Length: 239
Length: 239
DNA sequence: CCACTGAACATGTCTGAACAGGTGCAGACC
DNA sequence: GGTCTGCACCTGTTCAGACATGTTCAGTGG
Image (cartoon, rainbow over all chains, first blue to last red; front, side):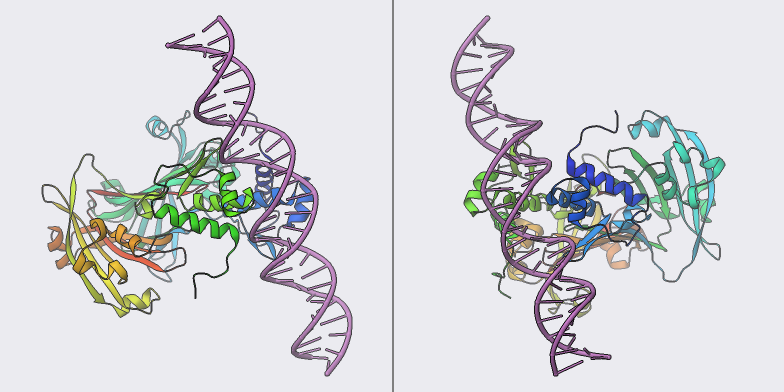
């Protein structure tokens, strides 16, 4: 289906501004043109512009202030950090580093079926995060669609060494998703990667995130050292 | 400060309708009067009514459908279940029961300080949930403000045997909050209540929820058997 | 140089109106 | 009895306009 599908004016304006913001112009922190100027630019009423801006605010891309204007709040941080949902290192001042232990294209029909996908090819990206003195504290196994720069990543590397940036480069912006959290005993392979004994208990999360239109962005299994990680989230309210 | 503080029309309408919905009229599932009828009732324009209805939809109290009308979705379920955030029993068809192991008024200046409260009196309500054949699977320790029917609960019991219903009876409706999730080794008291060995690993959550105006609704520490519970949440999107 | 004021900008709220599209139902017709 | 149609309801979208409130800054007076 062509992306020129008919859409209402305020949504079209929101999409246009979203594309410009993601493209970096205006940049994070910059002020958008005022409502009147945007109304002139798009040839619509001020109220239609306000609806579009309200959508962008809803998505966490901008913030407006009465009497001041609208400011870009969008940056390249993953969605869940922007929505008050974070896994935080429980200790302060701890420096960590991440190393990739696997990055290859795989076929996983089972996962494709569970995610409702036709294409069963994924980029498998497994990374271990460790404290600088060497103690591994988490293992994250991401499965993302093997499209564009994601598909080229095993050869070319990630864009800016960042999975989120590579997803964005592939046009995959997370809008919504779901996550499950439980506890898991490490198997032998996981234990070896994490420098622990098999059977040790870790926090386990499975996250699936999707674009505004419902396309898969990523499916990520994470194992988190419970002594080091705490999951924090905010819920409800106007956002 | 008087609750007759000046507020804008659409918010006043939203609050009035919210009060009516919480009062059970119209009931869950029932259809609200149409936009035009509400505009006549409140003596405002249809657009002002639409803004009020949008706020209620944002809060998860109603859902509107084009051509059909607005329907009440609010019920007495706790906020987090209504917002796609649930801790789910990992097994199917398991019947559980809950027993109260502690319900008394306490003073906890430390907790009051952490929650930014002047009053350090709380209702302490600790409950163990167990599978019908006796195996305890969770311990929940709630600390709620000792006001109205909450303060009377040790003597009179909870409204409808439900903490949430008693909170609502006290005028405390959760609008937003935060939750932390990690892993905890049971201490001796917890282990005894849960029929486990001290040191056993449980999922641990701490939830603080507040009203629209920021008043404390509840602070709850939960210990969840990781073999029985999985936490699921949805994030992002238009709600 | 500082404080104040007023003007010019911004967003927020509200109005009445018009039109588009969705839904349900009564009545007519086969 | 079933199907179709048209009408009357509903919500969704957009408009132009008016007014309220918030913010910023240039200009003026002390």
